[in-house]
Image 1 (cartoon, rainbow, N blue to C red):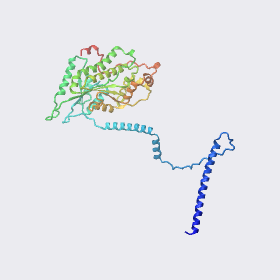
Image 2: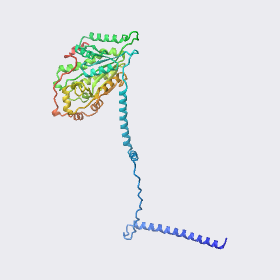
Image 3: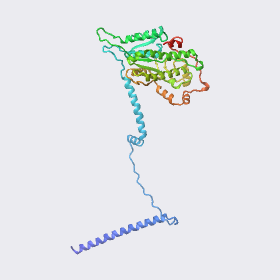
Length: 430
């Protein structure tokens, strides 16, 4: 190696050593200076004038983000509020499922079973007043769906009311429970023979027998209203005989036939007034309570008969006369007057009768609510829950009841179809 190159290598090596030594000394003195400044700055007995000034805060450069889109902002909000999002999704999903299921069930065709030759085979007995709009509506609907309808009658006017419909499959059934027991047994025996006899609707066709599919107990058109003090003993006798003893006695007479055919027994009971037990409606509350207890007992004692209770809400009768527009809230003028005084002049639209028709068909044919309770009509389930769990004082406040100016209703008599006052002694012999 030449001497000049060797000298240049020595000079570069010396420069690098000096630079590294200088940098290390500079870093050492800088750390010592910082430590002394921190020590002087934190020493309390030194005056502020000789303390070193603090370091200026480091500036962080501001980052300008691009504008967030609508979907990105929505996704960010949903991720930040997961509990609210889950509640909204559950509420909307449940509501959509209920609406979809209800519309789907409404579109399903509901028809009674028929024989192979197309003849009707299912028989239903409607125990209700032929003059009642709900009895007429149910009879026409069930007959249109393929059932044979029998309506018990006890007078000539009731039989003529059924014949005026001019429907071959809506027939009167002469049954007067106030008469001798032999007359009732004779009527049931004729019906039993009619059901068990093979029928030939078309010559040279296969014979078929009829089956008693259901026995429906319908509510009366109206109840007496007024204070308990103003309701007389004959009126109470009519209410209890026509609405409690009459259904009990009728069902007792048909029990062998119902058990043999394993039929359905359906009780249609009001849900609004009995749930609240408002003043001036004692007869309706007493009848509803007695029927509910009777239904619960039947379920425990009758294993082969399906006993179903339909809790009725508010229905809209559409084009029927004004006093029959509402099934439960305003059955006569006095109850309509009381409802207007408490709830104002505003009218509340009820559920269509199609919902009641579908509910009864599902209970009879599809076994819906087997051995249980079905809530049908607007407000039926709500009224039941409020009456069971809400304190009475809050219920009275919701109804707008004021004890100081409670309206006094005039006494009204029951509008049941049985004529006159039915004496207790007439039923003791059955």
